[in-house]
Length: 297
Image (tube, rainbow, N blue to C red; front, top):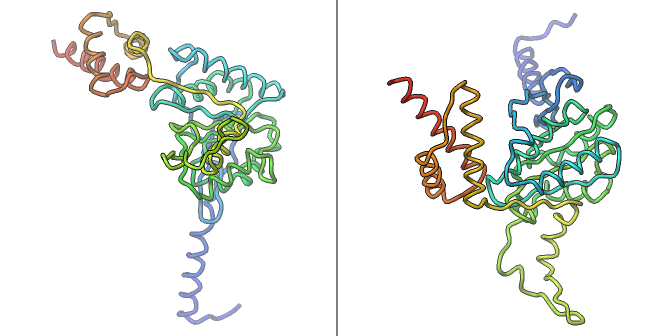
């Protein structure tokens, strides 16, 4: 046995502590038979999949005003689960209009049938090949979800996603699809100057090189699904559903009234937005105040 000097032992302990900080913490592999979703957690030079408990209980039936979008995504996911050809999908459009809720509802619908989700942050798209390797031999079908995704020009993660969608060496295995939600149709900011430099070829306007580059990523998604702001009637339908849901969860009965409707419209004006998120936020506020006032009376 070596008889090391105290100062050498102290240096070795510092080195080991530094190395330990670089290594991912010991964590059990995800049991996909009982877990329907996981997050990719970055750590130092790599990362790992961490099982998460799905707490969002939104169902497809509860999503109002997006029937066409639901049909597209349900059909595509059905094809994927059946082992048939299916497309990567970009869900884009107005904020709070139901993009993320639709994707989460798909997991609640198809999780018992073998669908699994992996959520990845933009900064972690550089680890796509490692994520694919971790699940490619699993007997499940995986949706890799990037929620609320936007890029700036030149980001490395942009190039990695582009390569994965393009069928390059980083392409996804057969049991993985990529679903992305974004407020931007092309995932990149668009400037007026981007449209300069276009030219007419045989009578048709060809896009500028700047726009061609910005469209090149979104073009790689086989499906584009657009979401728009609600009409007032559609917004009020969503409010009615949300209020009923909040009341039912608390075993309360709340009748629709003119006062409730007027408050909901006023709330949407203050938010400057009629969408599912606004309806949900209003219902929580209104039902909470209603039940609190009722408990005091």
